[in-house]
Length: 83
Image 1 (tube, rainbow, N blue to C red):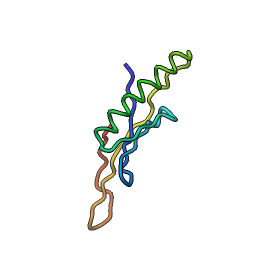
Image 2 (cartoon, one colour):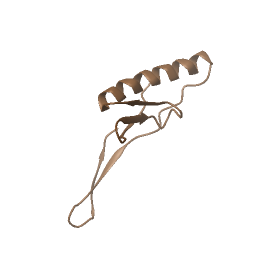
Image 3 (cartoon, rainbow, N blue to C red):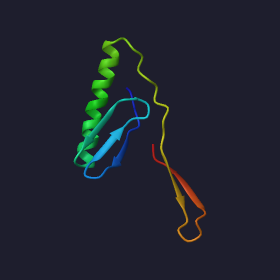
Image 4 (spheres, rainbow, N blue to C red):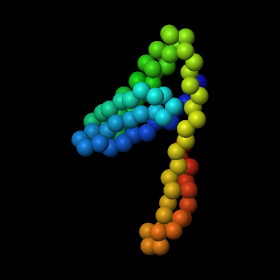
């Protein structure tokens, strides 16, 4: 099983997504949910293409964290690991 982090960003009128571990693998959509589905399909096609070309599947090395700052003091409060 392969597992890849995806980043979903709100754009002007839609959403876009990419995976830091799969350069060039991107997707867009009108909603966050549609973008996530489209990205899943994009990753499937990307991996299938790598397999057909007998290229290695990249290891997932990316992770994401949120850094929380205290609103009033602006000081560091916590890191919450999300992926």
